[in-house]
Image (cartoon, rainbow, N blue to C red; front, side, top):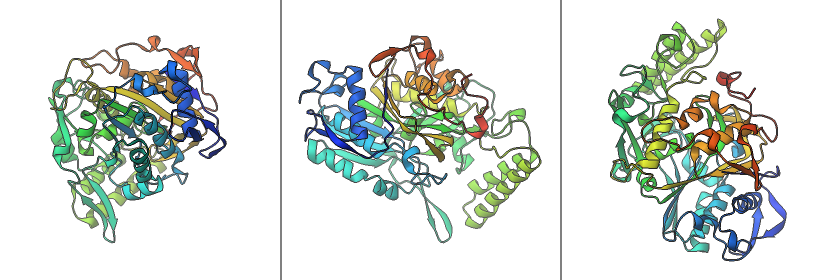
Length: 468
């Protein structure tokens, strides 16, 4: 896999456009275009034509006429930390740059899509990131059909009475239903039916999709019909998974969050993984959240949610912490769900069955020019990390991403277990087999350290995942 150490210069126009004869107009005009171009150059793709108008690097990966999906991270339209979106979502200039090089392959179509959290204002996100302009440029300049797609089926909108749930935003025919059944990584560990939870969703719906012997996921059909999926994560810390990048970003190919277990009800001392140890106050808060999520009455929702918040604060005041909803290093659920989706993407067929060999190519380009640290994925603060990574193995890319963040990948279950030995494996090799090149030079992956300062881990992971 490849790493490009970018210059820390924000996303501003370069003082002097540089030549890029392969692109219409023949020049690169911003940092993202320059960075992506250098990354592909250092990778050595289509080396014979580099520097000419015929250079087509991604053409080494897919053939003309392929169907391409770009999957960025569009988790939310605002950053709850108060910082800008630059450290929260995949930057639109990186999406644009990668779409340009994908368009050089003359694909049949390019779809750019994600399923943000249900409360994301997609219209505001799209407007602030100029997403329609990116699609129009690809279509008008390259003659390649390009669509921006919100993969969600459920959206929450806020009006005078509170949150309103809008269901069935896309028909189920736009998705492929998969059931990993006994092959799911959620099957083979200690839990009981009815225990899975995901924030702000009715647990009864989740428990209809995940029970013993049944583990269903609903994946956007555009993704399953693609010949190439370009995974474009923003590299960030994540309260439940430790990190979110190449591996967790693909949660957004699933259309309904009630197919996605994120934690199990109860504390770590009583068979759950919602929080460490036992706490009757936190267990009471969980019950209040369940009441809010099951109710269709706005007044009940508000009262129950506020009661839950009070109980968690009391628990913290009595010597505990504010961690709840699986936001700690002992979360043993979320990584299993994430890797289930990786396996579906790799081996899943458009009819909901599974093949024994990979069905599509997955290229990952990680946006870490400005990384996100702290209480992610919704309230990150910026880390001027200054690099891009790319590779054809999501597991390898994430292993390297962790090292470059200052985290030990062996201490983060999502990354460690991506190299596990199970049916429909995520990776065909071990971390010791990873080959890394930075700016074209070979590096020992076991000796990788952050280029700048290490990322600050989320509170629930601090002291448990860092390199030592």
